[in-house]
Each structure stands twice: as structure tokens, then as C-alpha cells.
Length: 255
Image 1: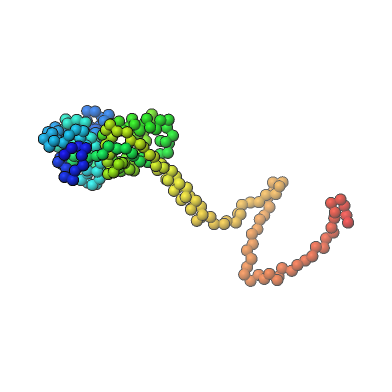
Image 2: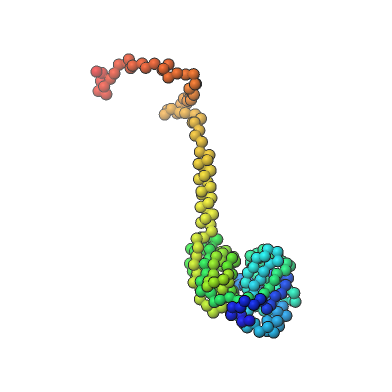
């Protein structure tokens, strides 16, 4: 089976390997990509089966049943082990020393990807395209559903892969140009939800409360404020109208 030709046949390579992170390997800088280190026996089997280079693999967790895809960097791991970037282990929901299934995989040349940054600040960096290209330089492929890290200066931003194309859940990034589309950042929705929750709390808790403080005159003296509730037995007709009986004055003197 060719690494680039579609086939309905089952995977030719299927290995159960114990997963270890790259920070236990001799080259922890490999954390930035999605290439793994396999044992020499995998190389022998790939050659014997006639699977052509470049090789791509599907890696799946027994524990979470989540999967991703990866390329291969070297075939020098101890037999029975595979070294994997820790970010990929986090995506798969597995810990150090847990088993994974590794199968050979196929992917079309990618032409597009839809990404969703976790923070809107990512889209405000000086060179988003350059930062993204730098982050994907160590990737052989890209899987729908993965969360990758993109470093911009001293900061690393998390970005979700919402979709890839054409077709399927994985695309090859080898010798191809991909157009990147960005969805609205996650923190926009989170901030909006928090604002709506605060507004809802204010509406629900907006009970009128009568003034209960101390009133003061303009000269600073205190004056009493009494709020008297009318009893049910009080009648409106008890309030007799009394006409004004004082002496009126004009602004300029008596009249």
C-alpha cells in the first residue's frame, strides 16, 4: 500500500507500544512537532510490506479511544516503546507508560485548515502567518480535533484544529501550501457568557430597596426621614381637603 494512495484494505502495520514523552528522550526539543520515534522493528516491517516514504501513522489510545496522526523522525527507540510529544499525549488523554496502538495511515495533500485560537490576543500578534508556519514546520500532518501550540515570541498560544481539507480528518503538510481560516477565538464566547450571566444575576436580584440612610440638610445638619406604610384599614376619604388660607405675595411685594 502506498503512503499516498487510498485503499480499503486494513492497515498493514499495527503495533501496540508503550508511550513515553520526549522530555525523557535525548532530544526534548522535538516537543514542538508531531513526529514520533519508533523502534527499529517498525522500520523493517514497513520496508518488508512495501509502504513507501513518507510514512504517516494513526496513533490511538486504549484508555480514551481518542486518536491523532503523526509522522516519524527516527527508528531508534527501545523495542516495545514509542516516544511522543507530550502535547499529543495530552490530546490523547494518556499518561507516561500507557499503551497506544500505532497503524500506518494515508492522507491527502492539505489545501485548507480551519483553526480556532483560545485567545483573541493571538490574532493581534505582528506576524500570525509566520508564527503558524513556524509551528507547523515540525508537522508531517494535521488532524481534525487536535489542539496545537503556536509560539509567538515569549508566549505560546493554544489553537484548536476545527477542520481540515480536502476530505477526511487528516491532511498531509509535506510539500504543500495550505490556506488557514480562523474562527472566532474561544475567549470571546467565554467573556460573552460571563457578561450574560452577570446581567442575568443583576436582573434576578434587582429588588427595589427603600432608602435607609441618614438624610442631611444643606447646612450639614441631620433630619429625620420616616417612611410610613399605609394600613389597609386607612381610608382615602379620611384625608380632608383644606384650601390655602395664608397670605399670598408677589415676587416684587404684597398684593
